[in-house]
Structure formats: structure tokens, C-alpha cells
Length: 391
Image (cartoon, rainbow, N blue to C red; front, side, top):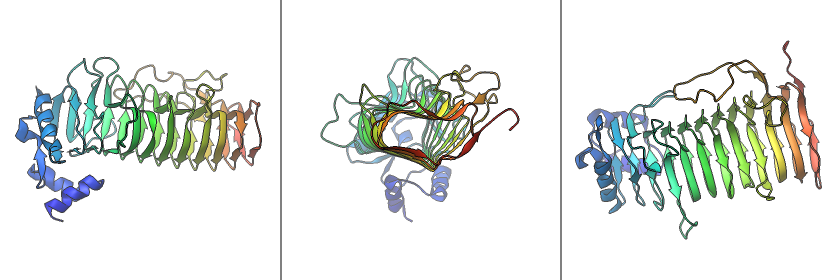
């Protein structure tokens, strides 16, 4: 593969590990890419690189080019991305800390580190974004439009780590068409990913240890494919209000503070037309009052057209689990059986909850029917047993 083909492959969605290692060794980007260090960025963890990085982004915008970040620690205030520009680094971050190409927030005043508003077609690939818990309500990546506009956003976040921000890891306000893949959104004081919008692919990510939800959609939201993610140790797992058109398939949920998956109405607008299939939900409801229905794996309340089949639900004993950067009071410090309830459902219409397995699925009750249903609600063939201190 020549350098031009390599650049094309990166923009198409990924860079081979062998070629990435080669680029890292020689610190020379492929032909046609701009090197952020040639614009004055130091990446030494001491110099403020905001202006140099912004110059590189603005230069790349003129020809729809790629900005390459050699491994290093780039200190920065808010950066504004431009349409059809790619930022590409070397991802060697791990579960607990940064590595490779790191862009670290160095300002307590901005709303975000990377602002992608109106930067349609942008790619952020292989960067570790570190908020250092600076300021208040600062997001890692932020899209904020007054309306949806006439053009799709079509941005991509690939192989990135977005951690330790006092707001959300990624906050999308009126987003329209996007993908987030192979990334880690973790240790943020808000949600890992907050969405107001639609038409998204969320695939093969860690959404971990956030003080809000791993994924939160509390305003209008729709048409999201959520597959093969690990959603763990957040205060809430996946929280969707009034959404429609979701495919939640093949994800691993672990240790949510409240319910792992919550489908709730939004001002009377029900969640609708969703599949919840082939997921594994373990030890949910860690922080919830065990007498409340938030201590459950699944809450589906005020919904229609929901298919919930073929999931595995397991209760367990919480054991204190601390990682660097996690808020101290995210979970209780005593061992508890969680959750109390398996699946809690209320006010459904034309829904199916079937063929889920709740072996040791809850400590008090496997299925909780709160009634007030409409037409054709099928709940059947959900085998299981309660977990006790002896099981």
C-alpha cells in the first residue's frame, strides 16, 4: 500500500496497525497529510498548542485534508473543527489512562475541547482526549446547532478515548447522521454519550464509569443502531426517553447504578419501534434503592412496538470497584445483591417480551407487571430463578 492509498484507507474508516506503527516510528505523515508539528505544535505536555493546532485545522479545511498528530501530549483550549477535515493520531491508550496521541484540556473556561458544530464530514481518529476534570460542565466533543439544518453532519469518531470531562464525553445537540466506533467514553461527570438527534451508529465501544448514563437520550431521538458495546459502571446504562427506531443488539451491560436499559416516555410521547435482542445484562441497580423499580435490569414504561427477546439477565453481589478518575460516591461501599427486579414493564401497546433468560436474574422478583397496557402485549417464556445468599 502506498502513502496515498494509506491516506484513503484512514478516511474510509481505519488504518492498519502495521502501517500505524510505521508512521509512529518515523514521525512522518503520509503524503498529502499535514503534520501538526509543522504548524508549531510542540506536544511536549508543557507548551500550549491551541493556536498551532487551530492553524493546522484551518489549513486542512482549504483542501479537505488530514491533520496528523505524532504521539505526544498536546495541551489545548477549545478547538473548532472545520468541514471535511480529519484529525488522525496514534491510539495507544488503555482502559485506565491515556497514551499515544493525547490532546489534554488546559483551560477551565470553554464549553468543550473539540467543537464539531457545522463541521460536517469531520473525522476524529486515534486521539486520546483528556479533560483532567477541569472547570464545570465542559464536554469532550460537542455539537450544538440551533436546528437540524439542510445538511447531514456525517461525522466519525474512531478509535478515540474521551475521558475525565466535567460535562459529557460526547454531547450531540441536534445531530443528524454520525458514527462512533471502537472508542472509549469514560470517567466523565455527565454522560458518556448524550444524544439529541438521530441516524447514528454506535458500535464496538466502551461506555464506562460515567457519572451520568453510558448513553443518554432525553430529548427527541431516533434511528440508532447500538451494537457490540460494553456499557458498564455508569450511574445509568442506556436511558432513552421518547425515542424510536432503535436496534439495541449484542451489547454487554455490567454494574449500572440504576437500570441497565430504561425506555421511558417523553412528555407523553412513548418509546416506539425498538428491538432489544441478544444482550447480556449483569448486576444492574447497584446504586438504586432496592425497594424501587430503578433497581432492575430493564424498565420499559410507556412504550409501543417494542421487541425484547433473547436477552440474558444475571443478578450478583456488588464488590467495590475503583478506577482512577471514577467519582468516589458512584457506588455504595457495601456489598449488595443487585438488582431487586428483573424486567419492569408498564403501559405497553403491541409489545413482545419473550424468551429472555433470568437464571439468578434478580433478588426479589423476576417480572414486574405494573399494568395499564393497551392492545396485544405478549409476555411469555421468560424462564429463570431468584438469586439468594445461598446461590
